[in-house]
Image (cartoon, rainbow, N blue to C red):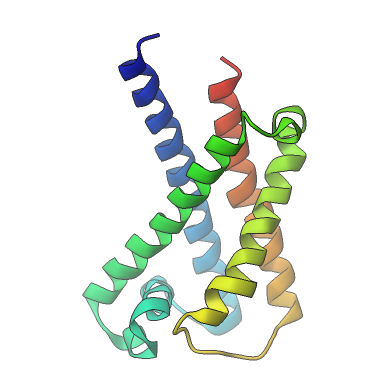
Length: 157
């Protein structure tokens, strides 16, 4: 396989895993935030944008919706890149694909909720154990696992 084809194949794998995980995460987020807070999809994306732009993004119109969508997928693609390049270097990821994906999803939730979100501009609310459990489960199954399985398929060729 030439370097150009290999690089294109790597890129396509990263894009695919980031796109799949990002979409599944977005759908889960819209459903959960509707059930928990009554947010519609536009409000969910504006909420994401508020992490960078301040809480005023929540009523900020179409530009904040687009910004939220862009930020959301940047995070998904960064997660996909990290996993893709860690996979060949860490035997546990190769030998325990499903468990590794679930653990990676838990790690994503932990990083987002303990590091990223507390240091962002999103409106702060009280800790909700039920929401945390649902968030952990969705990140494990709908974010970490798809990234792991799509990545492992590339390396198993």
